[in-house]
Image (cartoon, rainbow, N blue to C red; front, side):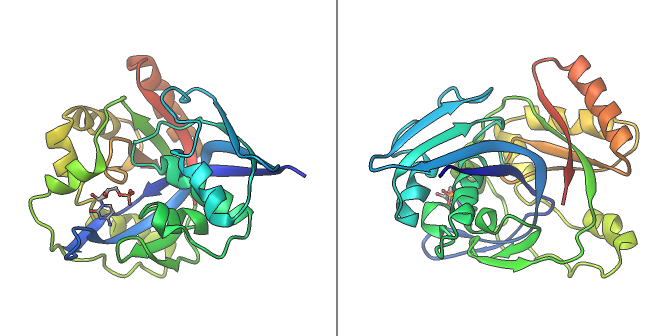
Length: 265
Ligand code: C5P
């Protein structure tokens, strides 16, 4: 029997870096949500492992034991044929392989949240809005997350995560304020929070600044920020139609960019 799963883009609406452990890993405080755009995975049990990757971002994705999806199957103690339709840019601050691995662990009801595969895998194996703390290993579910209309943009810039953390000027920043109880205050609250990696990522890939400026110039946007360690950025909108209009304009003005209107929740 084949299991089908959807690996959504992971978006860090906030990403506060609050410290660094002796082993070099950073302490995080992040509000993570998931999009209705993502990669598509199938898994069919078989005695041997195999992985076939296709889709618009399949180039450069390993089809063997180096792939996090393959590693997730091993962690779950299963073997079989995997297919991965790579619809999302990878190494891009929106989950990439972590979301693929997390989606498979979730679909297989695996008890292991997958921290050994990467700091983002536990929140991705949970797969719903959550406040992520520790180095990514502490995942608190967030109830009543408002649905958000967004546009995701990636210019193709690549920023290696370790390099972004290294470029961080200050590592002991304040954590997130507690989230408001009422949806109406949510955007104001979000404005007061940060992505502490954003300025560091821009020093490595100045393109990210160009993307943020283009998103900031869109009619109807009410927040613009980078996700994860970059380079993907997002803008939030009040309605699906303003998000779609902004996406259309950006895709026309910047045909080389990956531009996706979506719903976050
Ligand atoms: O765990 P993952 O493979 O996603 O992390 C990639 C790199 O990002 C780590 O090797 C580390 O340099 C950095 N990182 C960190 N603190 C975290 C998560 C990642 O320093 N909490």
